[in-house]
Every structure is written in C-alpha cells, then in structure tokens.
Image 1 (cartoon, rainbow, N blue to C red):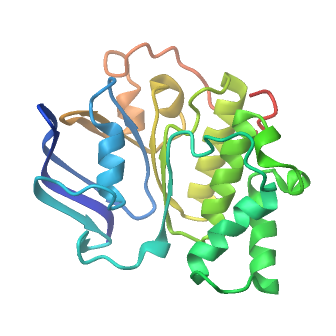
Image 2: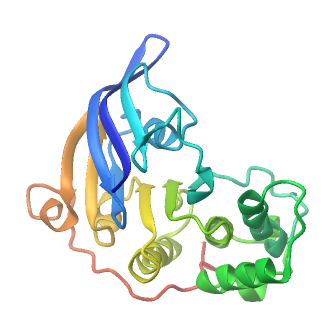
Amino acid sequence: MYAFELEDVMFAYPNNIVLDRLNFKVELGDFVAMIGPNGAGKSTVLKLCVGLLRPISGQVKILGEPVAAFRNWQRIAYVSQNPLRERSFPATVAEVVAMGRVAALGMGRDIRKEDREIIRQSLEWVGMYEHRRDIIGRLSGGQQQRVMIARALAAQAAILVLDEPTAGIDSAATDAIYALLRKLNSSLETTIVVVSHDVEGIAQYAGKVIKINKGAEYYGSSETFRKPGICPKNKGREPSDAVGDGSHA
C-alpha cells in the first residue's frame, strides 16, 4: 500500500501555477526527502498530502483513499514550518507532547496511565525526557523541533510529514534531527516525508529523494541522486549515527 499517491496534480495560487501534472507515490516505510528551489511548491505538496489544501485537478490519495474521503487522520502527524511561533508559550515540554495523545484520543478525554507512558517513551526517543518540565519556549531551536517530533510520535502516527524541521538551526542539530528521523524510519518503520533545503545533507539519510519544481524533476533512490553530476554541490558528507540533544542550535 502507498502512504501517498499524487496523480496529475495541479495547484495554483492567484496568478501563479505552483504544481503542474505532478505524479509520485510514497510507499509505506519509505523515508523520502523532498527538495527543490524556493517557490517550487514543496510546502504546497505537503499540505496537499495532509489534506490542508485540495488540488485544482488530479487526485491525491492517502493510504489508498481519495483525500476527500479519508478519515483516519490519527495515522498522520504533520509538523509545519516553525510550529512554535510564540516563544513565550507557557507550556512545558511534557504538556506539548501530551497534545499528541489528545489528538489520538479525541477532545475531552482524560490522559490515562498508559498515555503518560507513551509520552515518556516519545520523549526518550528524541532525547528530551530530561527536559520534560522545562518551558518549551526557553529551549533551543533544535530542541523545540525534537519536542514537536515527540508530539507526533505520541500520537502514534504511522506517517510523519515534516516541513523544513531543521530551518534556522545549526549543522550539529541538523545532523542530529536527520539521524533521529532515520532511526524512527528504520526502528519503528515510520513513513517519513521531509522537506529540506539542505540537499547534500538530507540525501545522506533518506532512502529516496524527490526534486520538486512544479512537477517531479527527479524521484528515485538517494544513492543514485548522490552520484556525481546528479546531486548539486555534493561534497560527500558522511552521516552521523549520533542523535545528540540539539543543544547547540
């Protein structure tokens, strides 16, 4: 089964065609890096995949169902660009991650003992359990992104969609987040689709790369993409297995 299927998708904002007959499929268990120039439509593609936007024409399917008919939204977790816009947000790390359980359980349901265990496990997975009582707005950018990933994990989603999760953080924290995503993909079999401007960096970690520029200019293995002449500015970075804590962000 495919996590996402986009068939001849077109999308436009006023006076601007963003996507033109875009076709690609993401298999369950894939780790896909989505790259492309500014304005190429990468964020739009993610919003189409998670149902926040609808195409002008063509079809988007989620887990085999047309997006308009899809109802099993708890299987998908979406982390937008800069999800914490207000640094004075007074919630603790644990409270933010608990929001993932609210999404899974439904509004008005009390957090149970088993939910608290899921929250703990999610924080441990991203290396942020020791910060569970900290106010999230006081954390570094890399740490905040880890908390948002933990919130998605707490929802126990099978598919994780992230829009530039490393924007504005340094290279050490960036590598740590990429390594974490690879670990989630390999150990938990989480399907991951991530937008990144760090072409040479993300291609070291993802299994597949799709280059978006209105359509799909490339979609295939990251190993092929990284060959000389295919991946721009390929400097041969080697991936790190260390997850780290993102504290240098």
